[in-house]
Amino acid sequence: MKARFVPAPGRSRTLVLLVALLLAVSVANSDEPVGSIQELRGTVQVFRAAKAIAAVVGILVMLGDRIETRADSEVTLILRGGTRLMLGEDSTMIIDRHLVENETHIQTAVRLLLGKLRSWVNDTGGRGSVNFEIHTPNGVAAARGTDFEVEFIEGKPCPADLSCLRYTTVGVYHGVVVVTNPTSPPGSLPVTVTAGYETTIPCESPPTPPSRWGAEELRAPGYH
Image 1 (cartoon, rainbow, N blue to C red):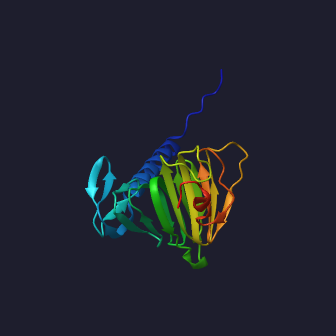
Image 2 (cartoon, rainbow, N blue to C red; image 1 turned 90 degrees about the horizontal axis):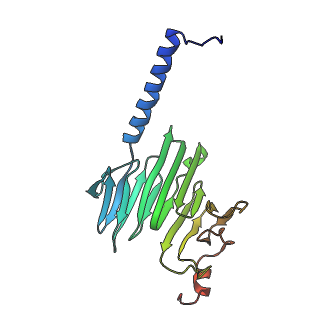
Image 3 (cartoon, helix red, strand yellow; image 1 turned 90 degrees about the vertical axis):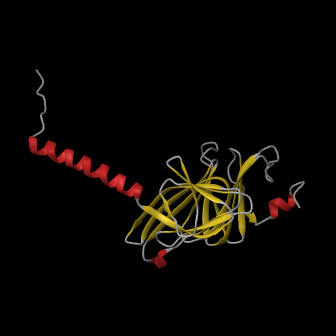
């Protein structure tokens, strides 16, 4: 007969306490504000737990909030740690992760479901590390201390592939951004985009080689 391991009573109580503590920490983190609305123009709504909240300047933004703008509206958020996000008109975003450790080690992941998002990523002045990512349905843009813009478009021909009607563009004002398409075939390489350049991600294709910002649109038929 095989011996059956029975944990000591003290060890069992310790494991239970550790699990309870981890659950408590995760709940507390999900309830903490990740930032606040700094500027607002037009009509903006925040959706939290199936409840729609009319956005106003100063309102706290929580992890998992879905933020939506209408036509002729935009909103700017300031996150803990100093990063600023400006969501353009007819756009939707969700903040999935924002961890700040001692104001120097910051990890942020934002989902851009539709529209345009400009990000001024705080680099902590070299005193720590910043990992900042914007995810669209077909792309990931990763930056560290950068000013850049990401746009996800549906229902319009992609300048790099006119047969594609859903695409992501990433343009860099300052710094460096690494761009990938997690839906592209295995072995596709990331693209590094520097200031003044952009890349486009058509559907499930890899990002295009960086080109001068606006060059692809100027070359595409019907774009003026």
